[in-house]
Every structure is written in structure tokens, then in C-alpha cells.
Length: 111
Length: 114
Image (cartoon, rainbow over all chains, first blue to last red; front, side):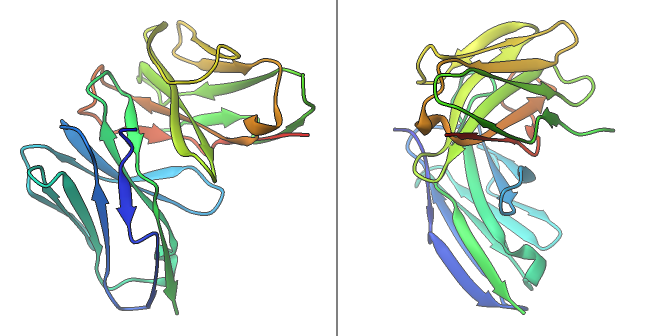
């Protein structure tokens, strides 16, 4: 399977702390996207990072990409209770708009 | 701009029946893809359509089919439903032909097969 894996599977932190999630994948990619999913809802796009980029920021989010290690990380700074959700990385399959999703990290932010 | 709209949001079907799910992409988006999400298998790609043509298909049996209309709206159909088809079915749309563009997801259709 070319599905990626997120690490850790579950993460529980206090409000105000930073949360870091990692994603590993198996094949070369053109880009990688991070998504958030609240329980039972659809996926919300967070950041797209291309294979020639190493780091990208969006508000409290920072994404890094290391293509040599086939890994990416998502950092959420100053977490809030509203950040409680599952986070997924998705890598393109080099065929159209097909993506492989990781197994997800379940983040709980305790107020 | 309206997002990706999926209907119905929830439905319950009996084994052996068939179901049709509908997806309206973001206006102007020509690519529509479908994913199945289950606790055991995670998010798995079903198929993608671009300008009414199926471009990619995931590893699902032939009971899963789809189509896209000239207005980019898409439907997926599952025939002869099995208990294991119970899942959240997510539709996503994108403006581009290739993966360099953001894909946007709908809220999904929850299918329960009893």
C-alpha cells in the first residue's frame, strides 16, 4: 500500500501548547496536503506543500517537507480547544487528482 | 462561493439494495473524486472524474460505479449493498487537471447498511 502513516496516532495536550504531527509516505510525490477532520464531518484543507518546498506557514500552522526522508510534519502553535480533530496528510499518486491518505492523528486539546 | 455539496447526508439501506449518492462540486471545478472512509481502512480512493471521463479508479469491486454530468455534478452508485459498505463517502472537487491544486471536500454521506 502506498498509504502514508501519521505519527502519533493520538495526541493529547493542554490548551496553549504546541502540537506536532508527523507523516511518512512511500513513493515520490509532487505535493503533499494536510487536512483536518472534525468528528463525523468532511475534511477541511489546511496547507498544500509542493515537493520543491521545504517549509510553509499559514497562521498558527507550520508544515515542513523532507523528500529525502519521505516525511512531513505539521506544527500547530498555541493550540486551542477548537483544534481538537483528526489530522491527515495526503500525497498525490502522480495520476490526476488521486491522493493517498495517511492513517491520521487524533488531536485532543484540553481547555 | 458555495462549497462541495453532498446529498443525502445520512441514509440507511438494507443488504442487497442499491444506493446513489450525489455530489455538486465547487462552481468551475471540473474534477470530482470520491473516497470511502471507514474506521478499519481509513480513507480510500474510489474514482475520479474529469470532464465526464473517469480518469482513475481505486481498488474497489465493480459494484461501485460513478459518473459525471456535463455540469460537473457527479453521482456514485453502489449496487448489491453489503454490510461492509457502511461508511462515510466523501466527494472532493478540484479546479485543475493535475494534483497541484487544492482538493476541497464535502461533508460526506453517511451510509449504514443493515
